Length: 110
Length: 114
Image (cartoon, rainbow over all chains, first blue to last red; front, side, top):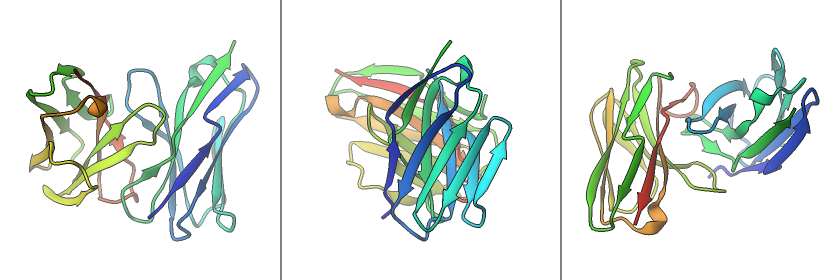
């Protein structure tokens, strides 16, 4: 089955700097790659996703890139703000229930 | 609000107790899921229901018993749990089963087994 590895497990950045979180997946047939943000006391919420027919997608300060050959995808957050502090999860799917990475705890220091 | 509501938010139960977790979605979705979230582990898929029918049981111990009376409601019945079952239990729903459409999560039930 699918296996998703996520790095780093924790990340601290200064406000205004960029943050990058990376994930690798094992199943070359996976075709959907969402990113979820989980704030304290809440469930995960989708922030951006990408499908296998696209290499990059951007939504304001967040972007996701996908390298199908290398089987890895990354989340990029620019101009980080304190409210970006949360746990971020990547996931992968091949028309099956999502398989999640272990999460990255991002701290944005004001 | 995500449209997925879970109750209770917190639950403490003894190992001999029987309790139930409830999930309700107001999104008109056809698929519902139970996930377990433990510290420093990926979200673990437990059960999948599609149009009220269980389509996946991810090798979950029988002390966890799901029930899906209709497409909007999902329960997780708990009995004779172990301390290692303490975790955040998340319910999610999506328009279609599988990972091709966005999954919406509830806020979770924080379960502590004593």
